Image (tube, rainbow, N blue to C red; front, side, top):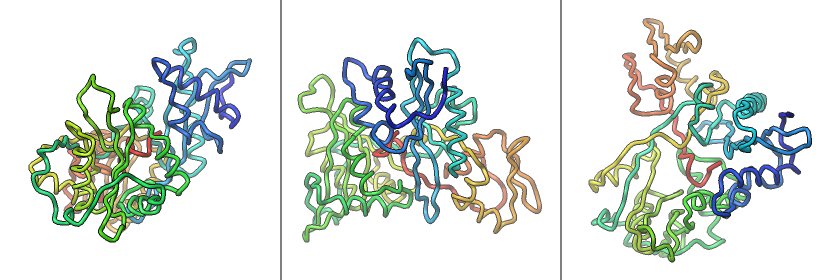
Length: 372
């Protein structure tokens, strides 16, 4: 068995393997839904090949930069991990993961974002991370709307709206650093809608002078799908909360949805507050997938946490147990998960009595428009 990086001309094999593993009933969508993995470009993915050159195990990997406040996190995303049934149980995926870790570290990435929580990942230190507020909306959720909604009109996305969509994404405190080409490609691929066996639609809010003030990307049932309730979900959104909030109401009425699921990262506090003030019930979950740190020192640097530690003369212990050491005391963690919760979850169960507001690292929701 040869285990190595998948070359560009071999990506078609990878797409076919992924479709054999993931797609049921002949609904083959992996290649079109994940162009960053399977279409022509620089391949960062790894695979296991038989002596005859047949790809039998694949681990897709894509480089990504995340803007987190004023800091940029260099990372890789892992997804579409699959092995042909005849070759399972041979440890191939574990070997691929190790090569992916080495590749990402040598590229200067501090972390892997993994679309999954299998023991394959957790046994090497991958953990759930972050905090997402989940709201289930219906027509009754919008008894009152912000005054700003009175001056807005709503319509479907036009191609010439792309600059406005990019602007609203980049205005978010934590976001994927899209190029216009990548953004258009991910919009056209609509992976989440395909996975949900639904269709993707995009609505925008327009001001009286025809400026796009916000947008929402939706996954909703097909009109002819009468077997289930018309339950939709928000894939991505952008714009001021007073604009985005009524866009959700428009989506429910325009597409005649029975409910709409909205997931909001913790740092979008103004939007969360609008829902809470409307007494809409909320549930809390982790961000999508799991996170595997490749280089702790580099992660602290890329997220700006190291600047905070330096300013307060705090040392981080990452071997022989996790702990924080200040000039006056030490604060041990019971587990690695507690340390990562302190980094990424604003209401981490672990607290330290240092009288310091430890900086929580904001990240975008990683099962949204950007999904690997």
